[in-house]
Image (cartoon, rainbow, N blue to C red; front, top):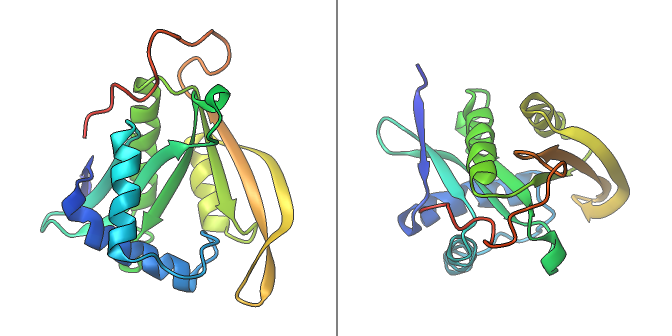
Length: 187
């Protein structure tokens, strides 16, 4: 039995989400942001993503404390990319190593596939970020490339690792052009 549950995120979760992300920005290379966004900016990002039908979920413990979050967002803005999403998974520092990230990513993959998306792209900051690379490999992602020394943070050059996973039939069948992917997801 898991010590946490996964549920759709709500706007009330934004302070906890912001706190988790702030730590990632200030102490990690998983994101290339340098300054953490404030709560208003995080709320705007949350509203924009969920308003477009992209899944955004949280893991919480038995007391309702948010342990981590994950979301899928547009991989690129051009219409031809509408069937592909980029995933993001962030776990609170004191919840790492407890399976939270794996459960979040597994559920995010399920929701994204059910919502009609066909490819999930992981853009992992830092080729030295072994936990994130392993997390994605365990979920079924494959390495597709590395942008070497593409970011500069904490006084050093950092690679960007690209990983990919097909969702549902992936590219083996044509998409249903009568609906926009993501419209099945309910917040």
